[in-house]
Length: 348
Image (tube, rainbow, N blue to C red; front, side, top):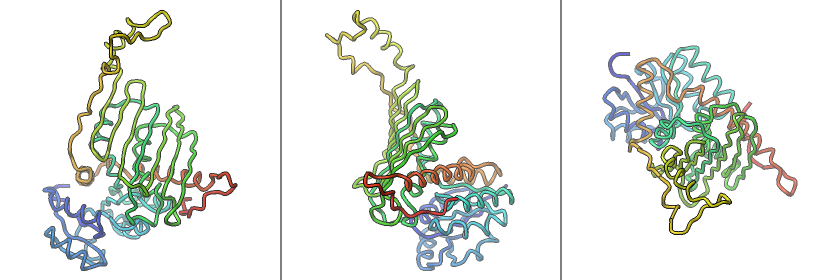
């Protein structure tokens, strides 16, 4: 595709405003407008970013090459469908849909009409995740913690689809292995869907992943720790920081330590502070906005008619695992003999 990509943002909520801001700043984009049934809200955002406001999809569908769908999850399909049917590229906020069958149908629509369908797993574009990707190592154990205060958004879905889905997507991209087993527990405190969840996954490769997500915390924390035979990584998505202890960077100290082992193979600590000799490196992390990188990748895929970095196939795979996690949460038995009383999305 030559020339600017004509885009519109569907949905004038918090994320819709962020997408609109970034599109308005991109040289390769012509922002056609913001669409929302709340004409006042759409008008305010359109005025702020120098574009037009529309109340109906029909007003923009013949004017755009690509759209971003940023509406409640339950409406993702109904909003994205008419664009996909016309072969118009769609970037839809995570998760792809509120059910696995619908997610699969959206994927098939994009394939049938040969159009780009990207999903908004913005954490994949976090500079921390990008730095981790560049290391290109094989993980053995992964531990993720994603907690935040209750925001009263995304209450139509549980914390697995709302928050943990980011970690599911990243862990699947790291492990690159079929799943052997999944165990999970979750509790709903505020609504009918789980607000807290813990999951343990064992992959056929032997890699183990432990994930915790909560939207009832008193602070925000998004961390992941990765263990491999070559390195240990500790990463903070929120602060955009990371450290790595690698085998290669510590070969010399390992050789030195061997010289100080006693006859029983124990380290003689006298006169040496060995704990300060480990080489701990800070990851080289770019300070880039993940959402901007996500949208730049989307526009590039539209221009090149290529598979996006976070494809609909990736999203369906993540939702398949999320579905299995949901089943395991509902099957979990507590010591009083009851199972989790958590609302079920129609996964299958």
